[in-house]
Length: 515
Image (tube, rainbow, N blue to C red; front, top):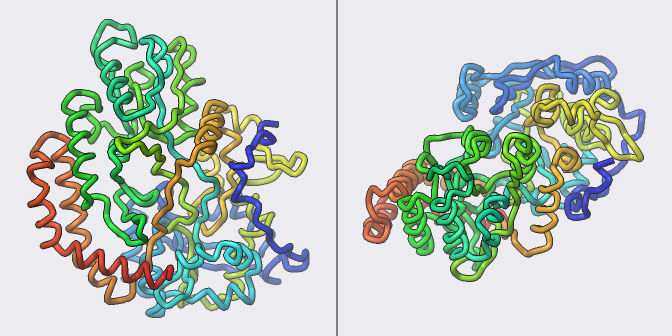
């Protein structure tokens, strides 16, 4: 079976020891117990009570989740959360996308229940996880030291990688780029030398379906685009302080070079407008040369386009060395997400609820949340969960099929990387092993929990500061203004807008939270 080829690196974070539940601990309740839930996330504005995974969990635990989601008419999870909080009478469970900040803000004020004691007394599997990863307990705790939500916990290390058209390199007699200078030469050749052979200069040397991925090029000049897997985030400097990448000197150099590459046609002219379909379009039309995107999904194009584009080979390559000689992959899977679920103050069954949360951290619950229903969506073969062949080969994304049955949704659960490895193409697996053989990954900023005064500073200043940063960033890349000549006034404006106050608040919270 394919799953048996999983490398030690791929499974490194799945080997934590957990206690074993006794059979008499299920069901959790003698009589069915209904708990209402708000579950707002990008793919579903609501919790479907007929999810197969939900029905299976009901049968095993006796807990029935009843949808009570606010904001079903909006895809904006922040708007949905604001509507929920404004109504005051919260459902028993509040879950979904990016709940960490509001839960940690309003939990200490009484809107959500503190979980530390509940976990200690009634959730042995959750306790075992955080006992072995205490730094993650720190990362999700509010400023009062209490945990107020159980997060979605990703598994594995590698997410995105650099991909280049190896067949184009071969056609032009070029090597894979090893340095930023090599990369410039490769992209220039892609622009000028007609590697797709159609007699036109229509190649798009560098493209990205998420426009923010053009900012990954900043790392080639020893700058940063983000400190976590959230775009535009703060980052941890080598001296342990928190800074923002868009206010650092290296950023000026990086943006100047990106603007130069854009002006020379090495970067997709529609990078900010083409959108999520750009990868599909530019690769299927034999136009795209290089990108930075997810290992698993991007490598799948080799098989998908093998018949329509003879010799098509979109290969993961090591990040080129930066101007300072550093080879770095900025993106990695963050070990915690701001997604998950919390227990609201209205919940009259907190013990049963935390035991229900704990169920998803048992071996049985973890399999259910990752792979669906045994015998229907996967089989256990020699102790390994193996997806049904028809699920892997029906032409539909496996993660989409999982979402539809209620697996891999934004509940508080622990991802099992074996789920993704099974539908990761061989080329991507080799790429992951290549990346794992080099010291490429950088530490991540895991976020902070503000106290009330810090939160007030952040809310007052940061939204307008970030909006200004992004406005100037896009303008510089597109050629409206020059970052070098504008830099002094740009920094003066950021400081007038309160950047230093925000950085003081973030650093204060970071020092308190992580010591």
